[in-house]
Image (cartoon, rainbow, N blue to C red; front, side, top):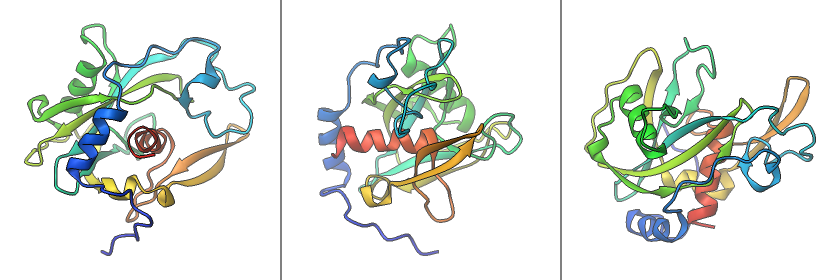
Length: 222
């Protein structure tokens, strides 16, 4: 299958350039938890909406973390998952490994690594922590902390069939090319919502996952 055209790729988008940029662009500390009423100051599903009226969460969001796994190849890839079609929430959507931060988790990094181990069998010893992206407020009531990690290219996975149907890589160069960051919209609960989408080889990367990938571009390449 042919790959989509990569238009205006980021200059020097190989591994060494990414790592140098990541050291400058990523935060060494996790973002502070969302403060009620601070919607205009944070990233999230609301970011592309023409008006923020009525979008602030009525209750404090639930705490979550995801691993943004950058596979350490000369031309890096991003490891993504296809959520199980049997899940009750976000079934069949493309996502990063991740989930709720549990009380026993030491911090967001520990939660993201634990979830990656549980969902796809990714050994935490194969992940080098690089830093954090901005927090992401989802429309489904989660405050998500994206933990960026460099993954050994010789990783092996064991998928949890209850949670994940598939795991696959998408070239970082494709995802970090602004021409591939489409802005789309659809009706959700009677309101027209706007979001990023990054279709790739028949896979539809959109919503929170695409929004966090756009934030990776903004922090590292823009």
